[in-house]
Structure formats: structure tokens, C-alpha cells
Image (cartoon, rainbow, N blue to C red; front, side, top):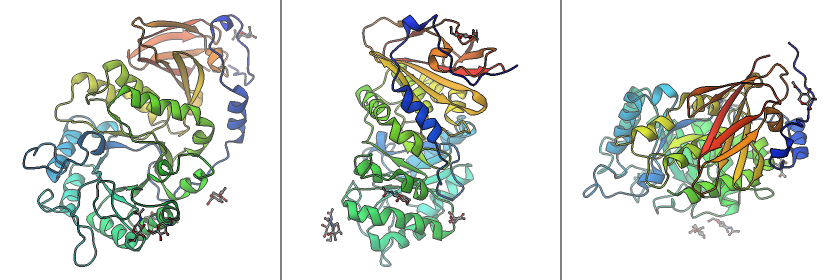
Length: 427
Ligand SMILES: *[C@@H]1O[C@H](CO)[C@@H](O)[C@H](O)[C@H]1NC(C)=O
Ligand SMILES: *[C@@H]1O[C@H](CO)[C@@H](O)[C@H](O)[C@H]1NC(C)=O
Ligand SMILES: *[C@@H]1O[C@H](CO)[C@@H](O)[C@H](O)[C@H]1NC(C)=O
Ligand SMILES: *[C@@H]1O[C@H](CO)[C@@H](O)[C@H](O)[C@H]1NC(C)=O
Ligand SMILES: *[C@@H]1O[C@H](CO)[C@@H](O)[C@H](O)[C@H]1NC(C)=O
């Protein structure tokens, strides 16, 4: 079987297509996609997965009145237990990460950060040991500024080395390094300096940088080549909140700026559109699928921020969808793109290994009825295999059929929902 590399125009379904989004820039990008260097700590060749406290638990330190939900070793151990016992770990959810508000308001006599002894009575080393004993990894948080965002001691430039060493001694596996109470010049020194300090500890520590989010996320303020060399992942944009509006806002920003963001990502270096909020209060079932599908297309880190002790079966199904996770974890490590849009529909596509593809049809509409959309593979620029493709629906968990590149394909997408297809060449 021969696979033609030529781009073939599909005439049969041309009438129904969405308007193409700058196909010339897409082609240029693929040709120009030069290999970039990534932080050389051997970590996260595919996007990291795990759980993080911030979006759901915030800076809740009130263990007297809210012992189950305050930032404490109890919360972290409970989540580690759930991750180890409820099938999360086997699927790749590996990091259990503490966000802000874990420390005391003062450093110890040797200038080291110290966990609040009431909320972390066993200490961080013991917590790391516990998490490791469950086959998981521990993440921690600090901030290149005078204070963390929650007002706890920051990692000022003079404290970078001591804090990196403290985290390594505790056995921490990941650092989220925030940017409150700091300025651009301090950040420009501090983020690379922390990268070197983590490396100097000799312990491989996933390094997550909030730096670009504080500089508007775009050049010239942000240098993505540099970020790829010093960080494993980075927040580009504002914090996610527990609402569909927030998810839509993030999706829109990543689509709008994809020419800059897409080439920045690759094995070892990932754009981070922020935590998964499936299982919380703000998203419907359809919207939860939509966040998950677009995060898979974006090759995004998958950090849930939810309550794994009480999560519903529906939310768990979405977060544990194997086909979707395999798309997110594809070893080519190429971030996907918004291919077409015609309100309220968007078509997103990600190139996978072995000339496979993932395509997400997102219906941003809220007008009650599901939308039917007719397309064909050649309209999605899936054209290299002339003998056709096998198409699978990730959420329906079914084989849709085998399609030639010009065969009409009908997709029905629920309001604020998504259809995620996995497309495999028969060549
Ligand atoms: C698809 O349609 C295009 C344009 O009509 C045509 O050139 C091409 O041969 C068709 N490909 C297949 C595999 O049918
Ligand atoms: C530190 O950096 C060197 C050179 O880039 C690399 O070979 C080494 O694996 C790194 N070590 C850690 C612990 O990140
Ligand atoms: C941090 O503290 C220094 C020294 O007290 C001060 O000069 C600087 O303005 C502070 N920076 C921010 C952003 O608050
Ligand atoms: C940034 O903060 C540092 C340290 O707090 C301070 O010395 C410096 O003057 C600040 N720079 C600007 C441009 O505000
Ligand atoms: C961005 O960073 C890279 C790597 O450190 C450097 O070579 C390049 O000159 C920087 N680009 C700009 C525009 O500063």
C-alpha cells in the first residue's frame, strides 16, 4: 500500500466545511519545527500526570473546623491512598502535589522553610516517604518573591540554593515555582537560578515554572526557547477557576496564540493550561469531557484538583478514559492545534506517532440541541494514507468505522460538549 504525501483537496464535502484557519502558517510551522533542547533532567518525556491541591483546596489552613479539607499531611496522604488504590496510579497519575500554604510564616534558625507542625506533624520527609511507599511522587510549591501568593515566606534570590537543597533532602520530586511578590528582573534571574540549584542537588526534580504567566505569556517578554531549556513545564496563562467560562477562556487563549505556543512544547517541556477541574462543582458532564479532550489535544500536563475520596463515577470515567490518556501521553509529544472554527464549532487536531491523529470537535454553543456536523478526513488534512483510516470515538468507547479520506463523516456534538476521535491509518 502506498501512502501519498500530497495534499488532496476534498471536493465532495467542501460545501459543508468550516473555514480553514491559516493553513499556510500551519504548513510553515510543521516545516520549521526545529528540534528544541529541553531541560536535561530526563523527566516528563510525556506530559506529567497527578493531583494538585490548589484549585479545590486553596489556602484552607483551618484544620480545627475543616480537618478533611485543610492543607495538611492528612489531605495529601488521603489523596495518595486514593491514587494508589483506585486505579489512578496504573493509568499514569503519579504526582501528588502540595500547592501554597504548607509552611510556617517563618523560616527556622538555619534559614530553612519549615512545614506547619500542626498540619504536617510528621514532617515533609516522612510525607515524601509515605507517598513513595505508595508508588507515587511528591510535589511541593514555593515562590520567587518576598512572599508566596498566600503570604508565606518566599524563596528570594538568596534563598534559592538552600530551598532547593531542603526540597531534595526531603525527597521531593517536583517543584511548582510561583511568581507573586516579585518583579520581572528578579524572575529573569531567579527562574534559571532555581533550575541550576535543583540540578545541583543531584535529585531529578520536575521543575514547573509560573514565570510566563506573570509576563503575559507571549514574546518578547517570554522567551520559550529559554523556558524549554530550564523548565519541564510552565504556566502560560491565568489560574483556572471552577467554571466553564474559565475553561473556555483558557481554550480560546491557547487557540489564539498557538503559533507561538505549539512549537514551544515537546518531550520534557510542556505548556500548562492549568489543573483539571473535573469532579468539582463548576462543570457539567459534557463540559468535563470538553476540558479533558482539549487538554489531551494540547499535550497538557494532567493535574487533577478535586476530591478523589468522593468523586462521582461519571467524573472518574472521564479522568480515567484510557484512549484519551493515551492521546495525551503520545510519545511524539507534539502539541495539537485549532484547525478550523466556525462559531459555535471548533475542530482541534493533534498529530500522533505512526501517522495517527486525534481530532476533537468542540461545540461551544449553548442552544439546547446537539449539533450535527458533516466532514471528511481530507477536510481535516488527514490525507497521507490512501487506503483509509480506522476511526474510534474516545468517549463513546467504540469503533466508529473505516473511512476513506473523502468519505463523509457525520459527527453529533452536544452543547458545550465534545467528540474526540482517534484516527489510525490502515496503510
Ligand atoms: C479524494 O478526492 C480528491 C478530489 O476530489 C481526489 O483527487 C482523490 O483522488 C480522492 N482520494 C481518494 C482516496 O478517493
Ligand atoms: C543536571 O544537568 C546535567 C547537564 O545538563 C544533566 O546531565 C544531569 O542529568 C542533570 N541532573 C539532574 C539531577 O537534573
Ligand atoms: C521585596 O522586598 C524588597 C526588600 O525589602 C523590596 O525592595 C521590594 O520592593 C519587594 N518587592 C516586591 C515586589 O514586593
Ligand atoms: C525588583 O525587585 C528587586 C528586589 O526586590 C529590587 O532590588 C529591584 O529594584 C526591583 N526592580 C524593579 C525594576 O522594580
Ligand atoms: C531566548 O533564549 C535563548 C536560549 O537561552 C537565546 O539563545 C536567545 O537569544 C533568546 N532570545 C531572545 C529574543 O532573547
